[in-house]
Length: 192
Image (cartoon, rainbow, N blue to C red; front, side):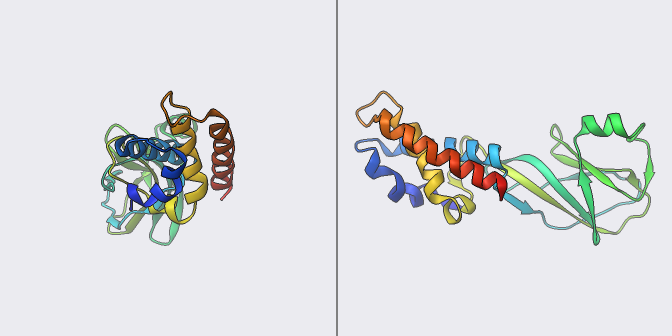
């Protein structure tokens, strides 16, 4: 994870007099927007062992993160498709009651768990989840990918947010330019 202060060099000179807590919250708020819109923060979870006749498996979350989406599930060497529960209900009749070799998976947001479809009849297989995350509002750090891959574009979004505030550091003209740079970074991250 990247410290919020890692981004100061890209931000603070363009918002003179802006207090550090305001900059920090703008970094977190922009990280939430960026990760929500792009799915840029992705990681494979550690392995979980399947259990016969059990279709729901918990996801261990990074600190100060929530799940945006389960992107993929791998059982052994086989990759399953990840679909929404709504699609599963419409596409697979009685999916909650079916047993066999899993072919798809859904994310259960309420229980922070992945359900594999159909329910495995054989256990003791290794399963991993590719998950995209979003930082929480109280995050003290943000994903490294924002610093390593998107630092300039991401920071432009932070600057834009700060420059639109009705404070001494406001600069609406620069905010508009920075917002354009940020939107380009969003488009680039989405295409990646």
